[in-house]
Image 1: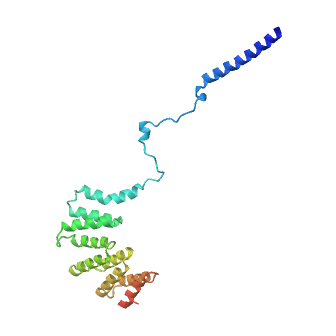
Image 2 (image 1 turned 90 degrees about the vertical axis):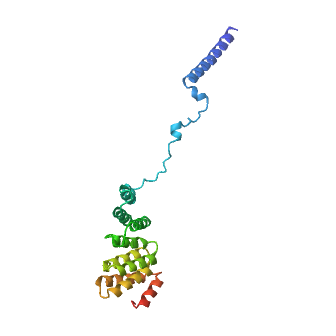
Image 3 (image 1 turned 180 degrees about the horizontal axis):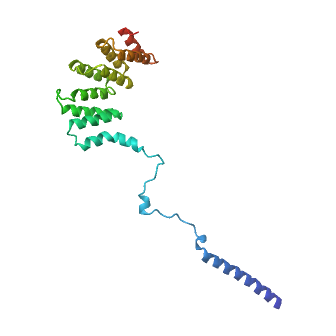
Amino acid sequence: MRVSFQKNSTQEALIADKALRAHDLGRKDPDNSRPRTPRPFTPDQKNQPISSGAPPPSPMKSLRLLLPALLLASCGGTDPAATKDAAYSALGAGDYASAQALFDEALAAMSPGDPAFVQVSFGSCRALAHSDGPAARTAFLALADTNDSIGVKDYSMLVSELMDAGNLLDAIELLDKGLTRYPDNERLSKLKEHVVAESQKPGNDAAMDKLKGLGYL
């Protein structure tokens, strides 16, 4: 009976010791006994935008596109000369719609006798070449008929502008008018070779027919 009592006491002591150790471990790391829950966002974190990972626009490109508006805003939009400068800045940046609107605004504040009238009118033709080739060609020929200051350089520039805009037929018609007015001009003759070469590319059958009809081929 004494031996049995000692064995039972030893077993009970071991069980009690294991229970005590488990209790101590639970106190040291109480979070192990229950599932973790995600931490909620704070108000500031909820309002923070999520980055798309796309690179920001080039500062120089953004400045170039904003330059016409900045130039115009600096003068309040009331000075035709400043509006003209803003229009040419937009034209140089390839913003043809803004350039056209600014040229029209400058012309509305000018008279035909204004020293800058022809320059602004020509700029308007260049901008219009990218949206309405026939209208640009017609406006330019009317300007050339009433102003002796319009010359070979202007014909050449607008023909090139029309070609860049994809208005090849209008470029051919304007070139023909220029060659009729300046038949022996070397600059226009070289430009004709360029127009012919462009017309010979696939998909320009109408331009080829136009050149043949005018006797250039």
